[in-house]
Image (cartoon, rainbow, N blue to C red; front, side):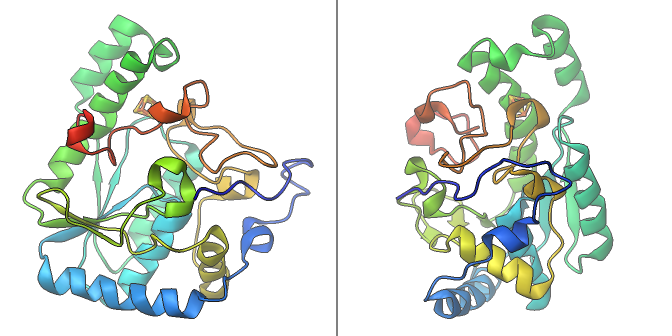
Length: 257
Ligand code: SF4
């Protein structure tokens, strides 16, 4: 079941409390969930090498990277730098690359493909149709993702069941496709994620302090307000059912993934 954002966006960013203060509310079973995640990540490293973490540098993903480093696991991390990320995300990327024990590799789109697409369709093509938005995601995300996952037996994501109706059935280990997907935070709540960040002093994206619970590319992400769904700020001009970029849509559902 998806949940909604529980605080108001009223007030200026300068006067607003930090995301850690607003959201760090562990569920009653937080310790058990953390123990399960602590066990799952080493299992992924032991049984599915080569395995890698896909990080968007959002709240869930910084928790996972922190756990990989804290547990001393040989799990490299990759980030898709689409060329359209917020300055805050790019700043966190640099801090993460500097501080992470696990290697952090950046994958970028083929520049010629981006230039040709923008020249043909314009900078704001994604707003004109779902097809054009998916074409942009295909060039900037899906093609680099394919390179990042090439040769990998498994990957690790920050998907949580609470994030949206489309993710309500996300399992901890998804074996439905040839490449296994680990979702170690699948049953964590938003409060659990922020409890971990607050109590471990994990570095996070400054956009989370500006009411961005879900962070993607700059043209396709906005802040949200009280009562909105977690992913309401992503591709907000589209119907809910279309709101995946393809990274986490199954092949059988017609995605480019
Ligand atoms: S999220 Fe938006 S800017 Fe980023 S790749 Fe997709 S359509 Fe393009």
